[in-house]
Length: 248
Image (spheres, rainbow, N blue to C red):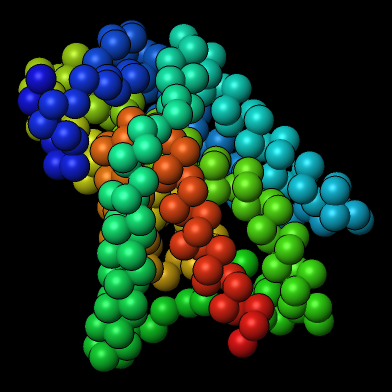
């Protein structure tokens, strides 16, 4: 098999939706369902205000996550379950290097945008923590809801990446390497643009900051063929930012 960037040369693990063929309509349905499902999720979460912490977690995180996961599982004929295979122990060193590189990229691109006098917006969740009367309690709630929110983002990014690759490879005549490369690139920007609410349509962040950060996280999935490492590194990266915000 032709390998893409970050895949091991002797890799035998397969990509679902790409190395196992499913119908074209299912691949399109996955992209549409997951993308619009994510838009509905963030719109709903931004407008609902449960009275209890558990109500907040259930209504804005757990329930929408379950719907997205269930829909993806159904549309993929169960292939979604292969995302949750346990990674190999040797993969974790690579994952830590990638999250360090992601952090460096985030700092450098922020400095560049600031030097060019390009305005950026504060992450909406970080802003909520910063403006909270009890930052630590708010941080705890955020870290709890992010267990589902960030896994949802991983499913969004990886399912769109794999579905686009499957379409290009099986139905648009691209070879495996080219299909994966194009899908990788497109999925980064789809991920960025779908965070429009979090950054109030700041295009510099949607088109430069977030796709660049997502490059490393999707790279982790490509290397490990498991969603767990990319989720863990995503949680570590975001959690670190929110912790710094709460302690500031």
